[in-house]
Each structure stands twice: as structure tokens, then as C-alpha cells.
Image 1 (tube, rainbow, N blue to C red):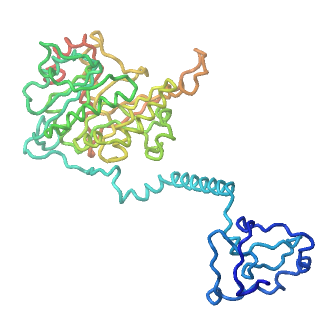
Image 2 (image 1 turned 90 degrees about the vertical axis):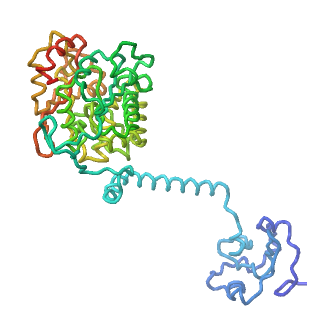
Image 3 (image 1 turned 120 degrees about the vertical axis):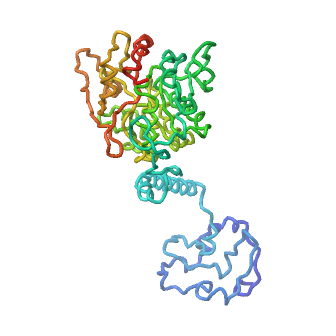
Length: 477
């Protein structure tokens, strides 16, 4: 019985499950398979010429295909040299791709996704600049023009503005241990109880103020950890001090100092100077001589911090409360600087994050809210790793008067650090050193010239007798 339309389905041959028919012998090949008629001249099979909705299709068990049925019979094709029957469109659609092709497609997809991700990352600075008017950086609420403290009708210390006596100054001392200039600070703070608070972080974790030490420092140690100069631990210590100080709601201003710092003016003058301004006093500048760019590592800082946003400056700051709270709760910028320090330490290089972290953070989040000049004097004219230290033989009246009268700050910059980093193969001791750049800046706040410096460093303990003896005449207290 020949099978045709309407004939009962035959049992599928075993080779039908693999969708490939067995090879036919020459005697079984139909003569029509030897002719190479063009496909366009052949009549369409019923499965293609008649809509399937009008012609019922027999249902086969899953995985079986009746290749002898007219529904799946395809006309000979020129490419079939032996006249073997071709798979129909329906059968071909059931064929699964080989594992190799799936792997190839997956690999190509990964390449496309990776390329798209790189393109997106490269455009993030542009995207952020477009969205910056609508998105507050780091989701913080920083007022660009916070008003100075104004609540009283009388001037304090005879300087700028009407200043409220509400709010305290938190003096944050970053020390190795003892406070050798404590007697001078006691004299400076005498009579101003309730208007200041003190917090001390000692890099020597076993240090404690012994009995009989200065009462203003005893009991003011902040729990901390060991601090290494030039490493991220310096920033950790600053953040610990700020975190402890912001717990007191009466603290409005936060001054970072060291054990070698001295006050240059009476307390009222310094309080008025700080409180009458809406700014935080942070030294922050771009370094055109590449000293800081050697510490900028693009694959770590991008896209959060771009090269032109990476600033440098003196670590000794005076922060208003809003900025102190920002530093305490920041994690994004701190993480970037921490990774940068770890990367540089692998190559034996210092990162000096204390000269970049707060400067860059505040520049990016509230650029109009910082002074960009230092209020703590240090003499870097020797172009060494540390500023000049004043010993007893160096102390004269003119030294103090010159520092106090300055209305310009002189910043000594060189690219000696990067010169060493990038040209360590140069061993000739007679080779010329890199040039020294001197940058002058005027201390002007809200259009008004000011004396630049409120504090100064570094003073050796041997200079204390001179300072105590001349404090009233030279320092005003």
C-alpha cells in the first residue's frame, strides 16, 4: 500500500530520530533526483502552498518526524548530487546548534558586552558633567554660601563682622605622644572655658598622659591606631579625630594641629577670624609640576576622580561642621585613596594621602566653600620632605612678626618626588636637580585681605622658654 495524503502514519524508522535518512542505493534513487531542475520551476509542496490552518497536520510524538509524509517531502535541489532527500523547513528548525557554535556565540556576546561597558565608562565624566546640575555629589547637602556666625552686636577681637559666641572650636591634635608646648596652649586657652574642646590622637598607641601633665590634655586621648608618615594611616587618624569631635553638637569648627604648632594670635582673634567667614580653610591647588600626578593612578581613581580634580595641599585644615560631617561619613573617596596607597606601597612609594584626600573631596563636593589657602604656616623653602624646624637659637622677635604680618602665602613646589620616582636610573650626583617653583597667593576672603596665618609650625621644645617669655608682646596673650 502506497502512502499518500490521508494514509495512516507509519512507524518511524530508527534513523528518523537523528533527522538524517540512510543513504539510498543507486537502484533505489528516483530518476527525478538525477535531474537538476531549478527550484523556482518546481511546484511548491502542499505544506507551503496551502495555509497550515486549512490543512490539518498530523501530530507526531516528540522527537519523531515522518520524513515519508508529503508534508515533509522536499523537491530535489541542485546541491543534492546524490538525490538524497533534504530536510524540510520544519525539520531544519528543530535541529539544535552544536556545542561549539553555542560557545562561539556566547564568546562574541561577552566581547560585545565588554566593549559596551568600556564605552560607557569612558563617557561617565561627560555624563556626570551633564547631570551635575540635577544631582548633588555624594548625595550631600552642602550650602554654597553659608552665612557667617552673626548673633551679637559687638565685634570680638576688633576684627571682621559680628560674631556669635555660640559654638565651640574643636582643637584636634595629631601627635606622636607628649605635648611639649602644652604650657603655651594653657596660656592661650585660659579664660575661654566652654568655647573650645580638645581631642588628641597619638601615633604611639601605648601613650597616655601621666599624672601631673597638663589638665587641658589629660583624658582627651582618642582611641586610635599606629600612624605612619606618608601612608593612609595619617588620614585614618584625621578621620578618627573628626568622628570623635562631631559627637559634640556644640562643636562648630574643627582645627587640625600637631604637637609642634603654636597659636599666633589671642583666642578671640582666632575665633572671630574663623566664625566670621562662611568658608572652611583648606589649602587645595592643582600641581602643574606633576608632583602630585605621580600619586594619581588613573585605573584606581577613574571615573570617580579625574586627573584635573586631584588636588594637593597642606594637611592642616580648619573645617566648618558641615564639611567635618562630610569627611566622617564619606566612603567612596576614602576607598579610592586607600587603594591608591596600597598600590604605591607595593612599589615602595609613599602616597601622602593626607595632602590629597580632604583637599580633593571638598573641591569636588563644595568648591565654593573652601578658602584654598593655608592658615597654618610652615617654611618649605629648604625643599625637603619636612618643613624647617625652629630651635631656640633660631627664635627672634622678627621670626614671629614676619609670619604674623604675612598677607601672602608662598608655596614652594618642585617635581623632585616624581623626578626620583620616574628617573631612578639617574645616579650621577652632579646631575642638575629639578627646578624649584615658587607660587605666591593673596589671602583674600569675601573680597577682603586678611592676615594669612593663625597658627605656625614646626617649633622645637627648646623654643618654649622664648615663646612663654614673649607671648604677651608677640602673640597677644
